[in-house]
Image (cartoon, rainbow, N blue to C red; front, side, top):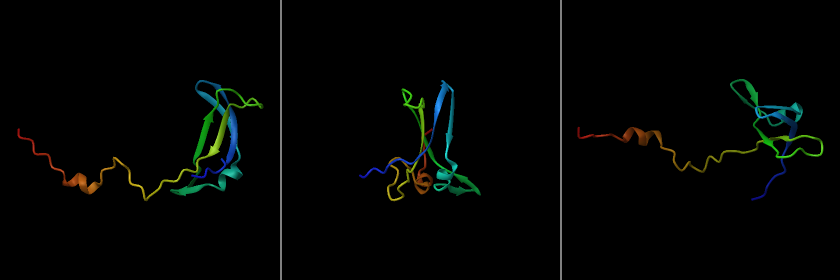
Length: 92
């Protein structure tokens, strides 16, 4: 499987255990946006590094290009029709 290069959208810093700051390029992100209920969204990957890079950044923001494969059914998914067909006859 060929791996595409990541689309880097931004970077940032982890300030403490529950707070991070970052910036990302809206222009680059908008090119990958999709519309849902009249609003635009972009799926992101946010990676926290163990050590800061040469610029002091320990946070990376890249585009999440994962696409669900509609042809592959979920292994544990129960179809709605099979749920309706099941009946539970308990003897008590």
